[in-house]
Amino acid sequence: MSTTANGAGGARNLRVGLIGLGSMGRHHARVIRATPGMELVAVADPGGDRFGVAGDLELLPDAAALIDVGLDAAMVAVPTVYHEEVALALAEAGVPTMVEKPIAHSVQAGRRVADAFASRDLVGAVGYVERCNPALRALRERLDAGELGQVYQVLTRRQGPFPARISDVGVVKDLATHDVDLTAWVAGSPYCSISAQVTHRSGRANEDMVVANGLLANGVIVSHTVNWLTPFKERVTIVTGEKGAFVADTLTGDLTFHANGTVESSWDQVANFRGVSEGDVIRYAIPKREPLALEQEHFRDAVLGTGGDTVTMADGVATLTVVEAVLASAAHDRTVEL
Image (cartoon, rainbow, N blue to C red; front, side):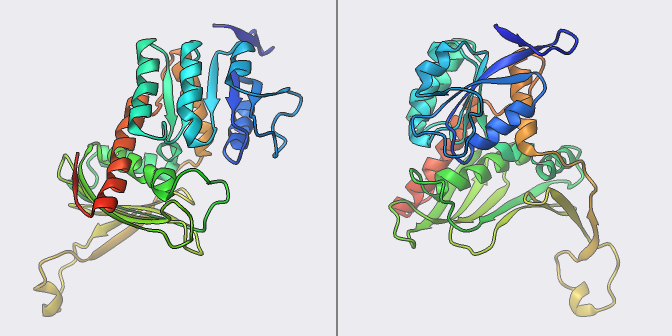
């Protein structure tokens, strides 16, 4: 592994290349430059550098030129349709790589990418940044500790205006893919069925709204509402269980717990209702770091072999399988078993 001197105590930096300098690529460039142990040594984008990401670096035309610089790791932030081509080139060159979500444009392509990295024993990761959101990380820790008791349901809402950055996929592969990944991760279980409906309200070729309901293998029911046609931004995950409900707001990084009530009611109409009542509400004080920064640190650690809680390419394929099932369900108006 070639490394670049950092100058501080003889420490060495990973030589990192970035391909794709668009809306996400510019943020990856900023974060890589700020991550200890990483140095951005090369950038590439055949479409140019409209955000001025390159700085003093030469703007390279493609993955081949990026590889020729000599890399220890690479970040792929090109449009989804090019993920497979770029990732396979990096795998062939033996470069550990993180690919922005989704792993590829289709499950078959995703499997080819995952297999290419696995067969060479290379670190391959997928950029599902929500797993690094402080609210969701705190939520999972509390679920794993049994604070909710048995988990009954996971509900997500991801709504907002249309993002100008997207042109090659619809809202399911761009946004709902986050909800599928985080739900399986938070609940610790894969999907076993999904049913969905989509709409095309904005005149674009791809879908812009989706509602999906599903079942996880552990019996947890799930529901997702995702769209690009809401004039406000919302990112909420609600996990309901035996002892109450957690609400994670991933826009603010806040986690709130709504406990089931324990105070007896003398109001007969309420007391006779066989359900739950409102109890205490707690908003937790949790450390809040930029999720993208934590994601890069996890990738760095995985490349160095010192740990790294990355989203594997196998995870990326599993998520894309559910995402394609969402689209198939909507297209054929049926529940898809997984």
